[in-house]
Length: 276
Image (cartoon, rainbow, N blue to C red):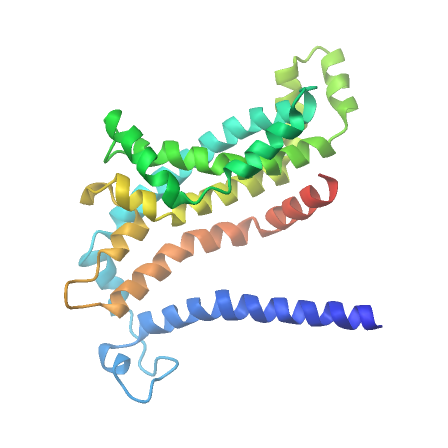
């Protein structure tokens, strides 16, 4: 009974943490985006809009090129996600299936590489992109995002590949499949939850990233959504309703993506954690 009560308290604290740190800020931004200008300066503060308006959402698209910023974010996040999955699939399959001599050292190096703070990598990445003439291009963000997402994607996929019996691949190769064919036709379909999990994690990381996007693509035409929204403020003004409306529009694609593939993501995280 004590263990159940303790676990119940832990679940309650976890739920409270999620609501306070995740749900409440989004609600506050949503309410701010719906408030008329007059309500924002009222005292005492109103928690929800009494006269909701969609004017700020219209201004987010007409006064600023928000749609263009969203398009840039979509291109960069999608390309980096695809590249991350392609490279991580090959790396994870090799680690999980081949008899590598230094397998544990390779896994340790992958984990260690994901612990470097991004600010420490900013200058080297900037210098590399500048020397290659890639600043203010999609490639300047796609390549770093791919590299930064590889550790997480690889570790997730390694766990899934290890949970799939080798006999299935051996049977496919006996029937005439090559190892690559067995990977494509047998292993990947069975590891689909892991692929979805790794892909969504990579996409969200690339969609939300700010520091590299601000530093590598200074051109206004190449700004992604986080950087573009950050530039809404002026020297003496901070248009909270406009920024809040743009933030809600930016959150919607990620929220829809997670909602659509929620079961696969949760199944991917739990299955990989249990069988890895």
